[in-house]
Amino acid sequence: MNDPVEEAARALAAGLVVCLPTESTYGLAADIRSAGALARIAALKQARPVDAPYPLIAPDLAAARALARAWPPAADQLAARYWPGPLTLVVPARADLPPELVGPGGGVGVRVSSHPIAAALARALGACITATSANRSGEPPATTVDTARASFGDRIACYLDGGTCDGTPSTVVAVGEDGALRVIRRGAVDPT
Image 1 (cartoon, rainbow, N blue to C red):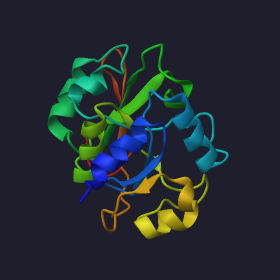
Image 2 (tube, rainbow, N blue to C red; image 1 turned 180 degrees about the horizontal axis):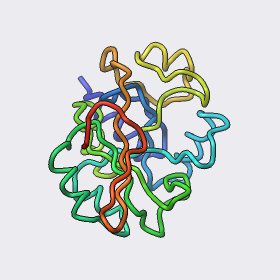
Image 3 (cartoon, one colour; image 1 turned 60 degrees about the vertical axis):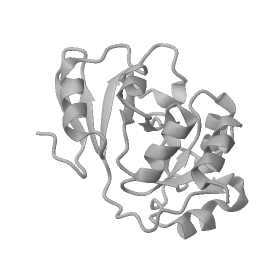
Image 4 (tube, rainbow, N blue to C red; image 1 turned 180 degrees about the vertical axis):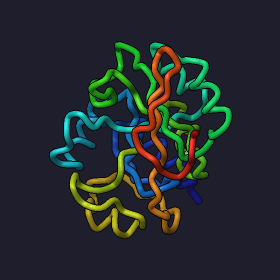
């Protein structure tokens, strides 16, 4: 019997899009190193605002840090306290990251997921993956694999079923180069 996570990792490595459960909702995953895969996600999302970059799931802290131009000590402290978990840190992005991953303020949002399937998929690929919600822009995020499948059908290479997600969004905190913290979205954890 084939391991579904390994099959999904092969699909990602081939530049395809995978649907996966996260701590909050189902998400659309792509290998961030593939311009074609990022374009596929944009086509699936339809009319995503330019100032809404794709949040990322890193396989580990080192991979998350590698996305950043600067990784202040405050980011290390939050990561040590809440990762793996539903806390997305927005840190100053490396200059060579694809524009779909960088917000208008120059930050990239990343977390190490506590969801066993999302975490296993990032580790199996050995790279950061997107974790944008599995819905078209403006529609409610999918909390079941069946809802995601109803929206996207066979335009997704594979669907990983993790049961029903609770829908509570991750907390998003921007960490400035100077270590200043700004809560962008309150969610599953309280970073204060």
